[in-house]
Image (tube, rainbow, N blue to C red):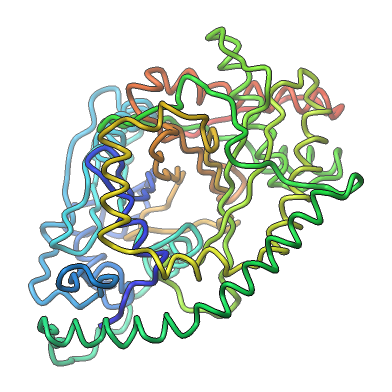
Length: 474
């Protein structure tokens, strides 16, 4: 048994019928490298032999009576692999758009909380005899970094890699009764209360450091929440999701990074800025003030166990009101430097520490009222988009013997902001996954297809010939 951290549990409390809090990945697999050829049963067998290595895939939630404290994870005594792994056919012609349509439909439904919080969908019938795999996991179980860590157990470096050692025989985990759960909750709450004075002191110090930094006229600062302009995708969420994909060469992003003397993440933000700027110009609603992006930041230390959420966030401008792409990158670079300094001033674990004090009943009721009353449309947006950049391996990976050709990540659209852009580097490419609310962004591919234009724009600004910008995987 393991209690969810406050941050893990917060992703449960935030969830409503329209605000789905799962993360997902859409992979394209080439089955031609599978020993003996592809079959759906091989996929199931492959996952089944690795379940003991992936704790989030075996555990389900148990709520504390009266929601007096955060839920706990237990090993599911009634685990049913057939429920979690499903098969579906892709409509012709089986290209990226059809795959994206299927991924959007899968992302539009919440996960069943009475079971381990994940699903895996095998999508057959893609072009070139490839298959798609959409894996959906609740955010309470993993974040971007821990999700990438799980790839170590679900992928191999060779097509014919041997199976892992089977799991050791263990007795079924004891399911705590209500009295035990209440006892654990009371002890945990006592420890939490004793740590509150120290947390209050640390918070006061952090606020003081941030205020001092913002008063320095020569200091660099990050963007501030609640300063974001309203956009067409900022508003109450519906239940439907749509998904779009884009792919650009990693080498070209690194060339731009070198030319401007910035980071890869700055270039990714610049690509997103150029993409959204042109999208808004096309729709005639480019705001005079710059868009504000929330950028999740992993605070997981080296060697720390995988699983759960070890994440904080910083705010950055996208400088979308600046027409010069070179100047836009410089503004973003200055802002991200300031945002990192402010993040360090606050402390990497501040968000996690305060999340421990989230009251389950109060937090969940507030989230549902906020969503059901459509309050997201009644105030200035907290931010305009979530942009998450997750580094992946520079070498090929194999899934059940099939080579992974592309991997498009999909983070959740948040209440009030129906747009999430998650980026994943793999081998020589950088894959973009656009997760949007279907009603707020009815033309997601019109947005995703602009990434290649944003790349070419930055290349020209950097004095680089845009020869192969926007090369996409099938």
